[in-house]
Image (tube, rainbow, N blue to C red; front, side):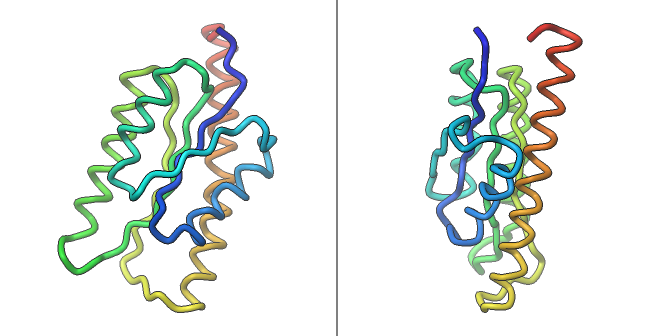
Length: 145
């Protein structure tokens, strides 16, 4: 099966910031080649990534979230679980699963911080697209995947 599409999973928390990753991705990948899936938060991304990758429809899955300290539990634990889960999804399915998940030490919901992180998500989205394209090309060259 020839895979010509990419999947983009976006956590709904801080949607206006996280969605900038898609803008970065579409600088390199045509929008019609991207299926967009929204999940409630970062914690739900690994399961969705695994399910999407398992369909065989995608060259790569890119997941994006902003994990901030909510005061109830340490956001580092959530971030680590998400990144571990995304890596596991890629290893289990053989489809690259890339993370644009940021965990700032200090996030304040101000216009200044929203602007900084929105720009950073756009950059990281473009970098994830570059990685997805490079991995796909390398795998096709080496393994005819």
